[in-house]
Length: 615
Image 1: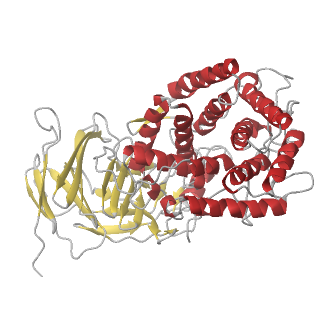
Image 2: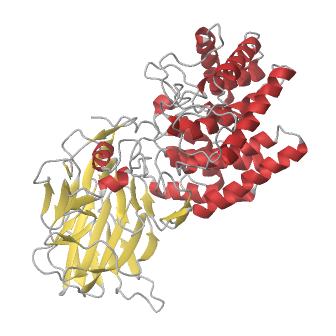
Image 3: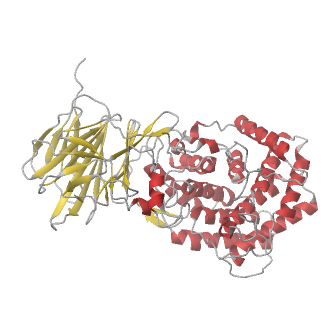
């Protein structure tokens, strides 16, 4: 089974002016065929997320006219804009809307669902989107709109801004992308207003960003991030926030947007595998966006020198939002407008800067979580998630159902390059059920094809084994498919086990259920509202690779040695002392330093590549 949202890398879509002209030409023909006598450009099957969609198509038609001067477009723009102003600008409060600071204000807003009281919770972001579509029509409508229609649209846009910032509570869904989008709308609106009003709107927009968004950032993996639906990052909305930060910087030139965008870009770079796969987040675990991410990934990928375009998106939304029948939807049309207007080209080379929370070389990568436990491992197109045992998740030694993974003290990291090899040593102090402090030293070494994991820990009681990951998915070229198979070898015994029990809190990789579906089923709230990361943390057990200790470890140590990826026989040799063990594989010899580190407490590591055998 292929994962529905993990499709092609976003940088694979042509983004030259000719390609965008072709996109606009296709949108133009569909829109003109759809346009009703009343001027409606909404998709006939649209149900929710609808209040801004006709106006979004209008903005694309206005942009197309600016580029082509197609004589059919001015009247279509005026007619569809009249429809929006007449039918989709609401001024009476939506019954049941819970986030009003002032009732019966008469300020305009856009509805998420058109029927009064049907689904009022979505009105705030729908109004943000309508503001963004409106300012794009104002920008591109010169030469099309007459004075009266332009004045009415500008008044509506200004009213949307007041509704968002005065009449309602700001950012009521605690969604960073929506909040930053609102700020962008204010910054763009200010360019259309007379000087005194423009200064007020711009000042308010910057204050909201600094005090209501930036001051509430959440730390994850060493980065401060705009919070998203109760978490630090979301696979779908995080890159959308990055696009909003790019547009905010393009419009305002304010350095704070560049600084925060670059921080988020580096964070995304560390999360992503080589193949562009990622999983996890507070609202959507693996529903990646498509074109909505392009502006931010392209703009900031170039600024930080990272190939963020490898990010796998939903290429069904590769250019614009679509309905199941393929029909164009105006939702998020502003993102297509901005990416067409922005001339930044993709940066396609990986960043050479070592990242604390990532190891990457060739077709191998490890993304580490905040505790420096692998959150996602990729080895030549196979993706491994942290496995679960007895409600504990991660990679690490297990004794009697207890996973030695959660650090109880400072986690220290050493990165090292040695010829064709890239290595990372992670040293963690951990405490087990016996309250004994032990140091888990995990060495990751890759030549870009295989990944060698060596884990050394002070002698453990009983029959320990290494929880070495959950094989979850595999790269199938243009798509990602589910899998429970992996090419892995161990110096000790190796088992692929499956949950002993059935039920929603036991994840069997052989089933067709995706991680996201399982996580939502375990979440406290209904789908789309819940936090699937919280649900996934309730997982009791999962499919897991279990590796036994390697023979020949120095006295007082257990050493686990695993190789992910292709290769011949795997028989590493262990030597040295418990304080300074060595491991020799077919590709390298590594000396793992004392847990105490050097004189400054930094981990010590030596890696010597071994010559390949003569052919």
